Length: 200
Image 1 (cartoon, rainbow, N blue to C red):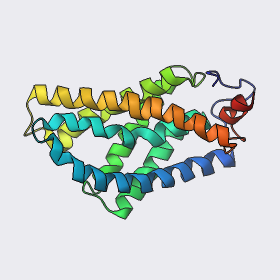
Image 2: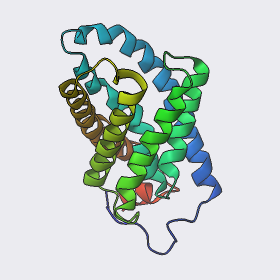
Image 3: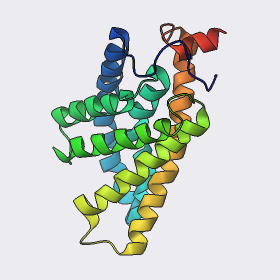
Image 4: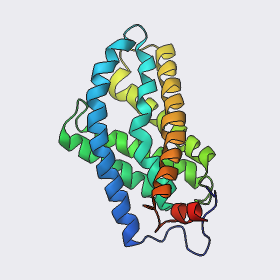
């Protein structure tokens, strides 16, 4: 997949199909999040010996932001998709309630920062991985204030953020990039550069 943006269009120019696609991705991942919440609750006790390692499960929650950025390639796409997903997840019901929206915003901003560093003109796996890592680190830091600040020591906090970053890199970064390529192969992204690059 090419890592450059079609320069014939301003990167900030949004089309109706861009907005609709960000919304659809957000809704779809919001439902996935709800299912992942159930699985997360079942798997979390396995990390009782070293709770911070449960950060390895966090990358799934960063996927919509990475995929939206790779597909839509517009500033704000990652944040929009992540916020829609977080809203759907919260409405369906989960353990974290309204703070899910805080997480959605933080995660979306993390991915936005990674693509902004390259002026929205690089869309390869390295940038996707960076997006996953930044989103995970920012979310991990915020979670220390929301959930773990009074109970975890500094080593625990660092292990959690590091584990989350690994998951962000592999699951959200490489996984999001692979998912985008898979979607392009189906022809579903024909209206986007990612789809046209695959055909090319």
